[in-house]
Length: 468
Image 1 (cartoon, rainbow, N blue to C red):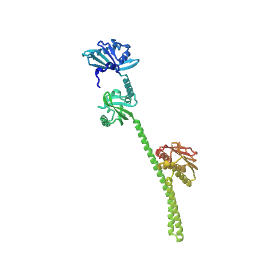
Image 2: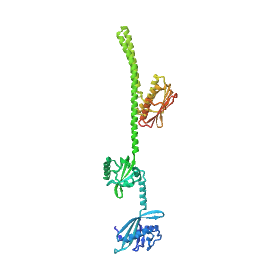
Image 3: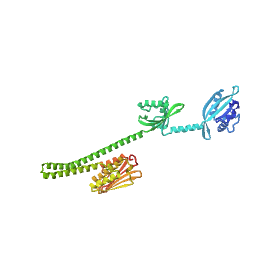
Image 4: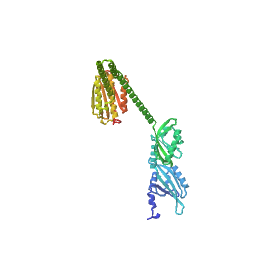
C-alpha cells in the first residue's frame, strides 16, 4: 500500500543518516544536529553542543571566515559544495561539505544546513592505490584513448624512459614509438576503444629519451581516469631477456653446427679407414687371386687345377674380409634386441681382434623404455671411446659401467693405459664427437686423466627428456 509522505518520521530519518548534519539559524547559531553532526562538532572542540551555540566559533579562524562568507552568499534553494580537511587526534579527516539555504513554509529563508560526508576512508584507499601506482616497480602509464595523450605516469616509467613527469604529460603514446610502429599502435588502440579485448598486447619496440631502442612487453587494461576513456598500460623491459634468447639460439645453432661437423669428420675418417682396408687388404687379396687365374691360363692341365684352387681360396678370404668390414659398420643394435647386449657384443668383437680385456657392468639399468635413437647414441659413445683407447691408450684393461642414477643415466669407461694431461692436450675428434653426442641430449662429459694413470670418461644424462 502506498504511504503518505506525512507519515514519514523525517527527524528519525535525518538522525539515522550516515551523513553528518547540523542546522544553523539565520544568525548562524546552532538549531539542531543528528548523531553524526554531534560527532563532528565534538571533533572540532564543541563537546556539549546545544541549540543557540555559536558552533562556527570552534572552527579555525580561516575556515570560519570562509564559511561565514559562503553562507552569506547562499540563496534559498541553492547549494555550495567544497572539500576540506580537519585534524582528529593526530589523524587527518577528509570531508565533502555541502551548504544548503533552508526555506520555510512560505518560501522565506529560515536558516542553513551543513552536511558533511566523511571521505577519509575513500581518500586513504585512493592514497594506497596512488602509492601502488607510483611506487610499482613495473612501468605504468595511462593513455587517453581519444587522442592517445598521457594522463598519468609512475616513477618506474620516468626512470625507464628518461623523461620527466612534465615531459610525459605533454606527450602522446606515439612519441616513444618508431615511425613504422605508430600506425600499428593507432589501429590497436582503436580496436580496444571499439570493444576489442584488452590484456596482453605483445612485445613492442620503444625509444628512450637517449634514442636507445628497447623492447617492452605490454599489457593493457581499459579504465576510466578523471572521467575520461583510457587504458592503463603495464610494461616490462624484456630487452635483456630477448637478447639472452637470441644468444642461446645462436649457441644452439653453433652447437648443432659443431655436432654436424664432428659427425661429418667422423664419417670421413671412417670412410678413409674403410678405403684403406679395401685398398691394402681386400684389393691385395683380389689382386693375388687374379694373378693365380692368369697363371692358370698358361699352365698345363695338371698345374691349372692347383692354381685355380689357390685363386678360389683368396676369393674366399676376400669375401670373409668384406663380411668383417660390413659387420664393423653395422651397429649390433640393428641385429640384437637390447643396448646391454649390443655393448657386450661390441666388447667381445674388440677382444677378438685386440689384446685387450674388457669388463662390462650393468647396474640397475633397463633400456626397454629408451627410444632407439638415444640407445644408438649411447652405443656410439661407448664405441667411440673404445676406438680412442685402442688407438692412443696402450691399455691392457677396460671397464665399461652403464648405470641408472636417481635422475638420469650414467656411462663410465675406465682404462689403465698411459693417460694424458687434460690441461695440455686438446680434445681430438673422438672426444669432441662424444661431447657433441652428449650435448645432443643435454648431457655432460667429464674426462679424468693424467700421464701414467689411465683415463676415466664419464658421460651423464639428467632426466629423461628426448630419451623415451
